[in-house]
Image (cartoon, rainbow, N blue to C red; front, top):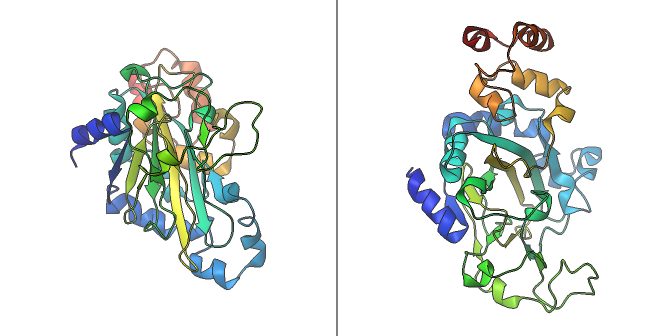
Length: 307
């Protein structure tokens, strides 16, 4: 995979679609554990476990699980070499952070997944997006199942003079004229012109769609009878862009799934969450002892040797 070419498309178009990008060695174990987290399409539509199904009904966001996941194989996806290399290339820096990670299950008929076109910056930064290379952010959809138009492929609007000239407000662009919006975040009148240029992002399981928070896009409905769609939504930023965040890892760091992940992770993988690299001034005999006590199965050798 030519990641430099992918970066060029990501910068010029605002997104890039990489069919089947995730290696089988990463993808297969994650798919094998997907039902640990979500009902299969067959089980959901057959109503095998109504109580389990109930959480997915009514609201499109009910199918989201946030990191750390119950599946260790799925926890490894955001820190896989393939995705970290992609994020580092797109951002132009090795010094990056994973600032949120979610897995998302959608089932035909469970909710209305058809969205208005929008940008994601409102919950990805406390400021506004920057096109300066040092401060870009990258969002990533990882397909954990085949995604077709009928299975709710996300729609992406290529970057153009029209989208580049959009002000920070409004942020949501309905196809037709909306109801009143006193805060000005919804465009009025509607913007049917943007829908004429949208492209469905489709591909087999393992496909990756990388885009920017200022890229206009939307989720779409699942029309295939008894269909489903499983994806992961990951977000990376340069370490210096401290104003860009969604999840605070510290408030999730006493979860049993977190301990299980950390104790088998590499120093590089842990850096993505903010662990100081070996050799960082944070590491002293005191902190080495404390971290080793908190994570008894974590191999502290790299940090000890650097000290």
